[in-house]
Image (tube, rainbow, N blue to C red; front, side, top):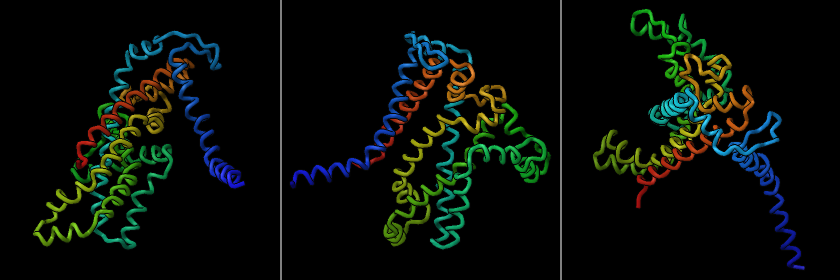
Length: 300
């Protein structure tokens, strides 16, 4: 009887995880295994009638004339997006100095608000801010420099990467600020009090107390920021005129755009699956490197 009750209790606990487990298996792992299979196959439009073609899909993708440029764009935009970490750290320090009152709460909400706005809405709003003629950003620069500035932040190939990085920073900076702020507030105040007694100034406190205690936060933001940056698509697609060409002049074309192009425009699922696998491998390698490098900062 006791054993029966134990089995019944165990089944009750397992019932809480069975639905999430089945969901993950069906919606994550099964599509992932199917993608691996498709990457080595010639798949029909309807997703069946597969023919094994070996690495031909990978060869087509890698030998395509514009793929190296898309790969480079993906890395450059991902690295530029990491600017949210140092900027978020500086702003978090400024907000933290305000104390834990209503004013700090106001700035926390204000900075985080853009992060919850949908990507398309952010792009549409900042297209007005960053437009060439009479854009708010160009008008601000004209006022600062006392001369007319008409830079095409989103339409000129020379500045497009900077323009989309501004869009990315505006949208994701709030998340970085909150993570940095939470990490800053977890540092024991006794450390700063002891440093003040020893005569350490603000700069030395930052170097020897704040930054060492923030390394875990920096590592987390670096890893997740690279993963997010390598998978950028929505804002770049909309800014390019709902085209996978990466306008202007292909400077915004990424690997994700290649995957979308072969999936929904050319309907070559084998090639798109190969692109997805390449993106997975690149992301995995960068994540492992980041995690490995971060281990050097840990105390023995």
